[in-house]
Length: 138
Image (cartoon, rainbow, N blue to C red):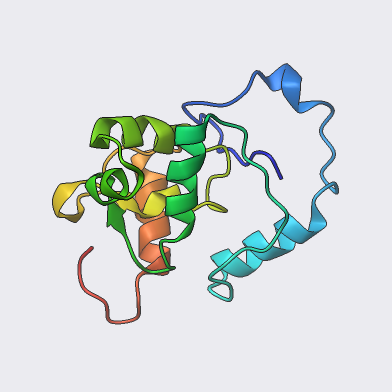
């Protein structure tokens, strides 16, 4: 997989770059996503390759380390990769593998759900989906 985008996603390649739609092209990814939304999967193991610059790839690698049901702040990621929180935010927003590389787990200072290329309603839904049973606020 090189991309997984939401309708209305902030940043995504020109639709012409996608090629002809083939709904049966990614059966393993579809299966794993269905399991995730059913609460039966916490990690993805489909082959993935995200295109981006070195800094973006470093940020995405850090995002991939955030466990299911957990969050990290933009500041946490900035400290891990040696950048500034706003630079990390830009890289997070360009993540081409939404859900698979769980950028919805990146939150603002104090745990506030901020910025999400798929929309804040989707981010809130995904965070709630991953909330541990009986868990408190993010």
